[in-house]
Amino acid sequence: MSARPGFDLDAAFDDDYLHFYAPYTTEERSDADAALIGGLLGLRSGETVLDLACGTGRIAVRFAQHGCRVVGLDRSPRFLAIARETALARGVEAQWFEGDQRRLHFVEEFDAVLSWFTSFGYDDDATSRDILARVQRALVPGGRFLLETMNVFQVAFDGEREVKKVGRDRMVDRKRFDAVGGFVVHDRTIEREDRPPRAFTFAVRLFTVPELRGWLEAAGFRDVQAFGGDGEPFCVESERLIVVATKPA
Image 1 (spheres, rainbow, N blue to C red):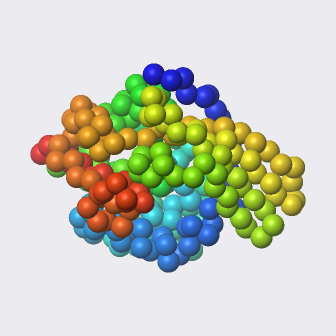
Image 2: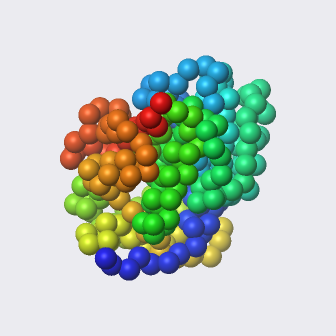
């Protein structure tokens, strides 16, 4: 297997990330995402939900508004501060924890766990498999897990250069897909008017449906279903990949 480049995860998820991804995380988009996730998970008011790598809490807060008991976990204190402010402004309660999904310690506490917006796949395979096992342990019997990521087929045959612009600021990703290792490498350059430019590299593990199903079943999940980014049956042309898996009752 090819060697993956090492990188600082915190460098990829910081204020620059919030700046350039704001157009993709609008209120309307967040409402639609939460509705899609809730439908695929069959969430009901009163259920307990864990949002892994919850970021600024845009999904978790919406579940709290619909009567779920919500826990958000993220490694960024900056993102969690925004999540707390949002929950307070909307008059809802949620628990927010600064932590790493690689050290998830809950045991049979949640009816549902979600990993949204490519929050999984930044570690080596052994660590990623362990994360799935930890998620399985965190669920009550019959609990559901939803994981969303990129569609490997779209990435493998997509263009090599992607540019996001906010005003005159630019974030440029030059992408290289490693077909042997199963990951995409992003060489990212950020140029903003109010600060010096910077560049860094990070990699994300991607999966075919059979491969991810195998990993989930090895972690103890069953009934693994695959969907496209809008909840349609998954196909090669799907923009994203969403899988929903169940812990046996």
